[in-house]
Length: 181
Image (cartoon, rainbow, N blue to C red):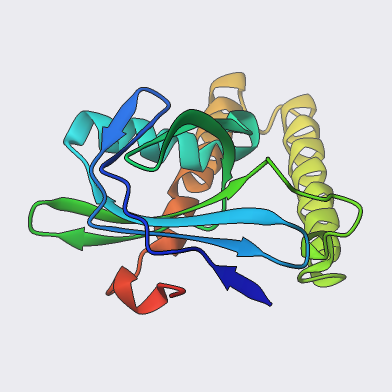
């Protein structure tokens, strides 16, 4: 059961060198583990949009970061990205940010780690095996003289460009239909 917080509206959000004025802002506490979940819709200028996209794409490296919710609480909150959707808009990309706070999270009671299991673990295992398999095939092709070092680098660059495009899977026609409140 989730407990809605009293109606609050952040005047702006400051995080990762980005300042955003939310069009929509909502907080709620997840009663099962005490975590604070934040949902915000923002439109950013092109530079901030690019920084945000890079941070979301590299969320494993980004990890937890400070979020200041001006107008709610001036003390920064440690958060991480949840599933963040986006849509094309007339004035730029519209982002539905979902942030999970580190504070109050009871990791021993959290069921989030079991979501989509065992499928998630199987997919991760398959992806690692496939990645190792591709590397082994490329090495064998290079050893046999079938591919040059430059050709292998082009193949690896192509694989990396597909990984960067994975954020395209989070595009929505209308992010507002995914709001939780």
